Every structure is written in structure tokens, then in C-alpha cells.
Length: 324
Image (tube, rainbow, N blue to C red; front, side, top):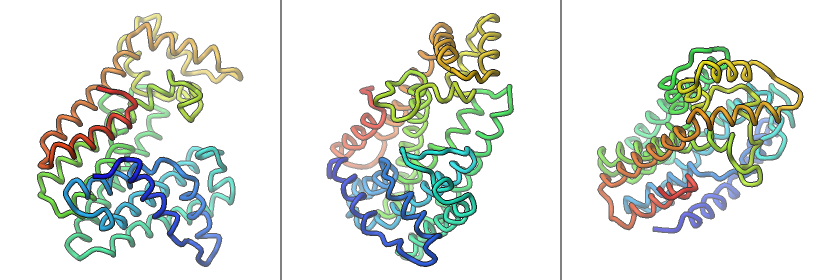
């Protein structure tokens, strides 16, 4: 198998070769723009890797990998509209650079384009890919709706939150890997196992993102540290803090998550202090490790050579930025 960096180079060159210079220009130029903004392109890399771990050339999976990444970017355009976000990957969001109507329409076109990429495959593989893709796309929409609903709810439970991040984030990671397995035409057992490997890695990744939002290094995290606290988001950290907090701490946390001061420095520091004193930060770190270990345990059950398992494990460790 290739190195992770090799797969990243291959997928980057592939996306550079795609032609979105079509008419009407105002439909296709935003598509070209959002895809060219960069990003890690982890999901299509996973599709290529999953194909080659089952001894099939990555080139056979390029169309499926493209579908995954185009869909992911479609969801980002619409998420940015819903969040009224001004920036994506340090650049203007599509709806800011053009307008909301263009963002909606170009996003819709990307969803249709994603399905078109499956037309490269024979009917049996096409049907299996499309079936998985439809299920995953609907779950992503459900996860987004749960996320929106949680903004106005004060009684969100940890199982509900975990379901939300599973649908909003983790299912697409799992699907990206299973698509590679489908293209490789491996056994159903292998397909399901590699899906579960990706799913649990996706859960760990999102919990890691929650943790780093509060406690990450601003120079390396890539986003504003404390953003979730500023927006009063009920993350895993918040829910665990509410579970463990004393009555006084709970009252303080509820107050802090009900205000939006002009200067958020004191609010962020106070909330982080509660996360630490209640044990919520430690509980979140433990959950990250737990889901990562579940992913690695699932990996051992896949019927592939041990050196290929090591490549996938190394990817997981790199993704999490830790050795567990």
C-alpha cells in the first residue's frame, strides 16, 4: 500500500483535473471555487485506501471518492448558509462571495453531480453505492436538523448528542470507507467492518474537535478556540459538565451559556475552568480514546494482511493526533 501522503497527492491531482468550466457560469463557478478551497480531503482519501487494502487499484475508486467529496462540499455550502458563516477555510463562503440563492442552487447541483459519478460503475456496484449514499445523505440531513433543534433545547442528553454527531459527521466517514470496499467487491462482512471502523473513528474525531475547540492551540487548531462556548453550543464537554457539576457549578454554567458578552475572554476562561473542575474535560478525553480503540478493535477483524491494518491504524492515529 501507499503512504497516506501519496493518497492525498493523488486525490489532489485528480480534483485539479476536474472540469467545472461550464455554462451557466454562475452555477458552476461556485462549485469549482468551493472544491478548490482545499481542505484535507480525508473522506476521498479513505475511499482510495479502502479499495487498495482489498487489493484493487485505487483508480477504480476515483469516481466514488469524487462523489463523497462533492457531497461533503455541498453540505458545507448549505451549512454555511444556515449558520450565516462569513468564512470557510479562511476564504469567503459561497453565499457571501455570490449570494444565498446561488449557494442554494450550486449546492443542489453538487448533490446531483455526486450521484452522476456513480454512473462509471457496472449496475450491481452502482446500485450498492447509490443505496449506501442515499442512506448516508439522509442521515447527514437528520444530523444537521438535530444540531439545529439542540440550539433551543435545554434537556439534550448525551445519547442524543452522540446520535447527532454520528449522523452529522461519522456516517460519511464510514460510508467513504465502505464505498471503497464496495468498489473492491470484497465480502459483505469486510464491507460492514470497515464501515464500523470509519464510523467509530468519525465519532472519536468529532469528540476530539469538541475538545480542541475549548482546549486546542489557536496556532494549530485552524479555528477560533472557544467558538462553541461563544455560541453556547451544548457539546459533549458541556453535557458532561452538567452531569458532574455541583448545584453551584451547574447554576454558573447555565448562566454563562445564557449570555453573549461583547468580550468573551472571561466567559471562555470560566467555562473551561468548570469543564476541568467537574471532570468533563477528562471524561471527553476518555471517550475519544474509547471510540478510537473500538475502531482499532474492529480493524483487527477485517480479513486483510496485517501490514494493511497497520496502514489504516496509522491513519487513525494521525487523524486523532495521538497514539492510543
